Amino acid sequence: MLPNTLAGLSLRDLEYAVAVADLGHFGRAAERCGVSQAGLSEQVRKLEALLGVALFERTTRRITVTPAGEALLRQAREVLGSARTLLEMARNRAEPLTGSLRLGVIATLGPYYLPGLLRDVRGRFPKLELRLQEGHTSPLLVALQAGELDALLLALPAGVEGIAAESLFFEPFLAVLPAAHPLTGQARLGLQDLACEGLLLLEEGHCLRDQALSLCGLARPGRDGRFASSLEMLRHMIAAGEGHSLLPLLATQPQAELDGLLRVRSLAGGEAVGRSIGLAWRRSDTRAPAFRDLARFLRDTAPPGTRALPAAAPEQDGQPGRGAAA
Image 1 (cartoon, one colour):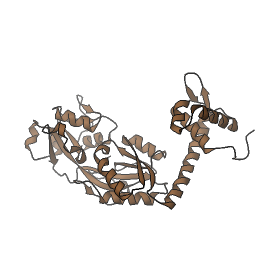
Image 2 (cartoon, one colour):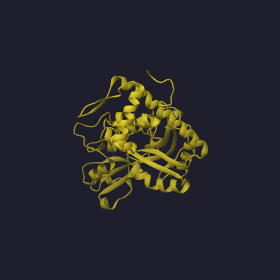
Image 3 (tube, helix red, strand yellow):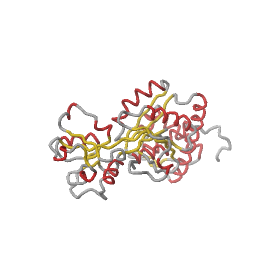
Image 4 (cartoon, rainbow, N blue to C red):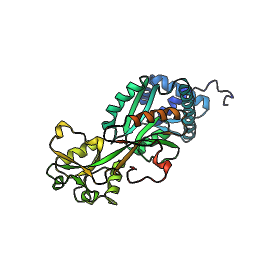
């Protein structure tokens, strides 16, 4: 018979069970939660006894969630999310932009923007501790929606329900070519000049890949297209004479090992060819005023060569224009 009080139900025990479900392993769940495996296993068994339901099917080879456990663990995640919201509300009332902030950043921006960002934020918000996570846009947005991230730096529009965003700055795109490329003789290139054989792209999953295809008027890459897993790999492929591409301005800063191997050219209409970088968070997050303060500071300290944008995000203003990256 289930108890009719909440006295025996612990948020910590729910956290243990969710960790086991996420990782499929008691040992790794214990590491994540900072407890011993034996202690975590015992608490999960006590939780199962309290609920009168087996949450997990245990074998010597694997741990799987039972059908009954699926529904209960889904509810456990909601309970933990509500508890985190309670703590966030208290923290926001006490002192905004202090303590830990889990910040996601897209991979095509992070390595080039974060070094200066961290310095500026540390000077302005000395009590704020940024915990950074880099990745592709879609997984980061999923993590933000699930409460696993607090905020996200990305190319706008976010285009996801329940997410608020403010624009920070416009980052122009530049043409990057190998030193011996025929087009290096032109001081400024048109997008049509790049839509030819030799256009290098990032692999699927990068929003920058879709932006480059769209700007160059290509529905899909050519049959013999070549792809890179990261912007750094793309830069090295260009330096090796493999082809040319469009890169965001912050990713074109010179590096010693590529000195003399690359040529960077501006684009005709460059004021409109690029992407809008913004800060996004959950609309339900009670720290929205603090995030707007952070966005205002990031606009005021936009990197050289970029252009600070009005606060409103493109998806709030209507359809994004040519310069808003998807």
